[in-house]
Image 1 (cartoon, rainbow, N blue to C red):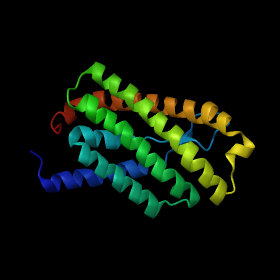
Image 2 (cartoon, rainbow, N blue to C red):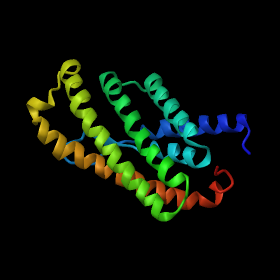
Image 3 (spheres, rainbow, N blue to C red):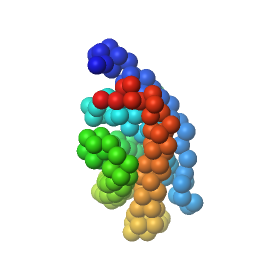
Amino acid sequence: MMTKTRKMALIAILSAISFLLMFFDFPLLPGASFLKIDFSIVPILLGLTMLDLSGAFSILLLRSLLKLILNNQGVNTYIGLPMNFLAVAVFVLAFAWIWKQKKSTSRFWLAGLVGTISLTAVMFLLNYVYAVPLYAKFANFDISQTLGLANYLFAMVLPFNLLEGAIFTLAFWLIYVFLKPTLKNYEK
């Protein structure tokens, strides 16, 4: 049984690691260098494994607040961070509902697939109704005018997020397998 103090310390440590990982982002698609991936989701998924869903969401929330306070990049942060928060949340929910309840390799990969599809759907929708209009209004960057909305959504957002979800799943699998002997002491 993990004490409340130990749980809070673990949340704080994993949040700090997640925040630091946000600094190491890189583009995946040529021609869409503004769509970047980072591995800040891994400590959140580790938090899900070691704690529970509320612990994972606490890590996500703290990581996001640290980003907002300590590494705010203006319009990009104000528009992108809420989208990132929701996309990571649905990805983590897939693992909580499918894999955390009954851990098996097949359920892990199913959670990764459902998480990837969910993340992609959320980002597709949010780009359409939220990001594109806000960037046009507040950043004078109208993607509809420069690339065309359908071209942007189907040639950039869709493949980027599908690839991102697959990479998240694979990265978490590799880290989970590597840390499994240690994690079994914490797993809830």
